[in-house]
Length: 256
Image 1: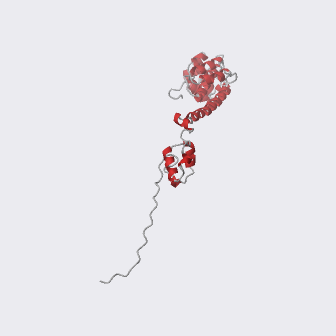
Image 2: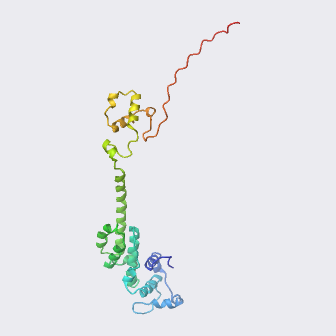
Image 3: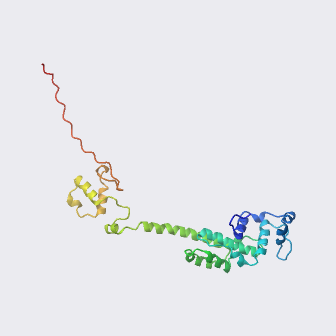
């Protein structure tokens, strides 16, 4: 039984994938189908002898759709390579129906109409990548499906690279300082303040690029850094405690 909204070609592909060609129908089972069994006739009009469920259904569908074009028109648009592989197998099923239903969709030859229908229903952004692959195919549907799977892997591997490049681009301000985006989050004035409090001579840090100051600042002990490397404020430095006054020398109480 077909699923809600499931087209006839997708239904037949699902039947094939679930070994529908191994389910044999006996004569009395065909007779129980009544009028529907009249469509299950061979190419010469002869009644099928113990046909498989898949074979009987493909013959019945062939009677309802006299031309391959009518079946190919059943496929809808698709936007991912994975959906495209499903569409390709449905187009292969259209030819399996037209040739008598003795083979599955993956064994069908890729025809010109198969290529045209596959490209016509593809999303526009996928067509440049698909055009050369699909038009060069001259084997069977299963072989082209494997090629599309390789294309999907290649496209999936290319996208993260482009994203990483985009994310790694420095901002205009950082590009002028030689810094990469996300590398530095400590203000220059904080670096200066920490160096001066540490006793670094002003001449050694005056005029130095911020990126060099940051690298030098990272070598300071954590207790000497006002903020952490990511910009969060560290624990404030504890002020040195002044030594307490020595206890007064104990003396005997004065007599009254």
